[in-house]
Image (cartoon, rainbow, N blue to C red; front, top):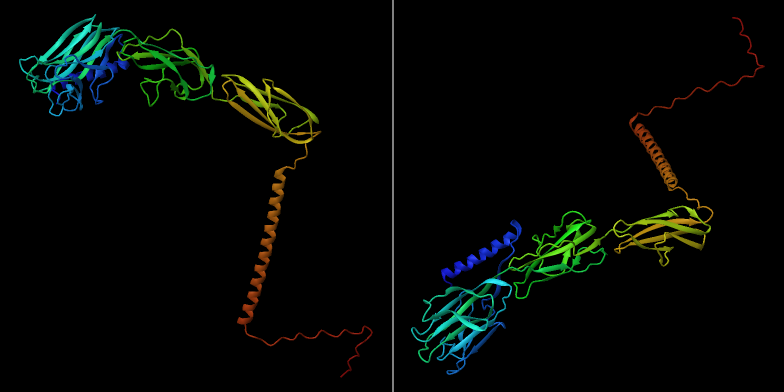
Length: 471
């Protein structure tokens, strides 16, 4: 179980590191900072390759440091001085031990080095059993810590200064020839830190002159000095058009703009869109040393994703050219990367490369309808395609206006509808008349037929009626 003092110390260290991180945005960057030179909490479950374990006293058999899960300060594991050769099953060390745990250290470029660790000791009280910490500098071994007996049945923290020319770090557990019925010594959470003043270096690698890729992978290189803390991240800075200030590149997924792996996926749509970009990088190491911005850009590139502007001058849609031979002419332009080449094809045939020429002569072309397809490519590889339909011959074949057909069709449809409607109306009227007549015959009383008086016989014009005799 971690002691309150050690826990507070670790919390304090984390707070300091977090605070230093916030300074990246809210205050000018410091020229130096505390960096971790080496750290090990043994949570891998075994000794890393950085350590060397040995026993210089073989009187009771060889005993080596190892990793145990029996006790730990934080996490699940710690280093125990008697993992091999003693009695791990009952957690006891041997007599006549001189077991060393050694780390080779290179700390050139650092100042104010400090070694911190936690320890737990349960050994013979008053005898010759004790835990030591020492360093080797200039070939001389110096003991800086020693604890015998007991650590109070608790983990204890310790922080000790070490010189910047340190060569090796040593943890040693030594015992005498008697009274070994104890657990021995454990160490955990070893941390070697120092103040580093040297800044890292970085640069954007060589770029092509132009591209149409979005995002475009911007490669970079970054280095820190030998034995330094190492590069923590780089920032990519850009500007467009060769004027104005540089802007740090960031994205929604990386809002701080701290890139830890090359290349950086630069998306121009998240920056200033298409254009001529200049780039440089700034590297920051784990001690917060920050590379100074360069006096000029590391590299530049034109990002162009729009095809050229392209149009036929002649022929145009629906015109007649020739007969037999004609010249196709066109115009093209591209603002960012210029027109690189043209290709042209007639009537679905293969495209013919014409370089940057803007005319093409076509001979022995049959009379009739034809089509041209023209393509333009810019320097970044974008392509634009246009088409034109035309006629070869003395004149264009007459084209009956489609709207006249539509009018005629609409008129015919109106006439047919009118005839149908009139016929339907006549039938309806005839039916109503017959129905009315039938209804009248059924409802009115019958009368004898009225005889019309016969018309007078025609008289002979020579006939004279005899006179009426007198009475």
